[in-house]
Every structure is written in structure tokens, then in C-alpha cells.
Amino acid sequence: MKRYCNYLYEIDDVPEYYGKGQIDRWYDHLYRKDNSPWKNHLQKAVREERKVVCHIFPRSSEQEAFSQEILNIARYGRRDLGTGTLYNLSDGGEGEAGRVDSAETRAKKSARMMGNTYGSRKDSDETRAKKSASRIGLKHSDETRAKIGKAHKGMKRSAETCAKISAAGKGRVAWNKGLKKAA
Image 1 (cartoon, one colour):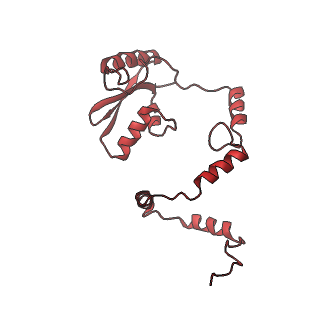
Image 2: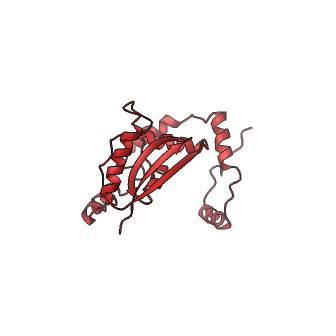
Image 3: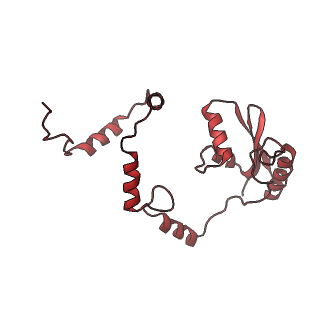
């Protein structure tokens, strides 16, 4: 049995997003990979350690969840229309909960993504070479280097990870082997 809910995100006690889905849908916004204004705003608020609260309202049916979504988006108003504070881009009431792709659709998606690590297409060798050449000589600023250092400070590799790294490097020839020192 599917369990439906509505959820309201508040940042610093201001209603920012009203949504509908199954019980754990609210959590997806924290880890989405798209570039929506709401996702960016939420993730920035989390990074800045602002007060982020998500209220969850269980519903007895998907239809009830849809109707409550429409009602509450109208109540709080949408930021893009200048009527309120919500980052919602629609008036609500559309979509489907827990959609499952057919085996045929999954096979098509799999074939399209095969071998790709950065999305639905693979760059040509020429494009990859251009991208690589454009990065030559670029260096991180001191501020960026400090941020990277701060993020990695205190991280320790497990013994298992160290063993894997060591095993991967065994037999590899050093990049400077055979080079003569400059006089």
C-alpha cells in the first residue's frame, strides 16, 4: 500500500516549498542533481547551516494529497509569480507518485547511458581534447585551495582503502624514472 503525504519546507521560519509524494519524497530535494532554483536554494541553506525544517502531513489518498497541494500553494503564493514565498513552479496537482518504468523503457535508458559517466551522451575524442586543452595552466585560487583543504581536513583513509591504493600502484613505473636532474 502506498503512503502519500504533503510536505512543507521552511527556511528560517519562512514557507519555501510545498510538495506532494510518497512518505520519503521530501528527502529527494536534498540530493537532486538538476539545477532547479529550489534545489539550489535549499542546498545553499543547508551549507550555510540555516534553520531548515520540513513538516510532513500524511494523507489517506493521492487525490487528497493533490488537492491539499493545490490549496496550500495558493495559500502561501508562488515566488515566480510574485504572489508569495514558495519556490514552486506550478500550482500543484499534477504528477504521479511511485511511477515505475516498464522493462522496455529501462532497457532503452540503459542502452542510451551505456558507457557514459556525465549524462545521456558521450563526448567525441575531439571534444574531450578541446576540454582538456582549455584547462591547461589553470590553477585554483588561494581561497579555493583553502576551502578544499578545510573540506578534507580530518578525513582518514581506512586500512582497507590504503591497501587498495597500494595494490593499484604496484608495478607502476614512476613518472620521473630515467629523467636526469637539471644541473
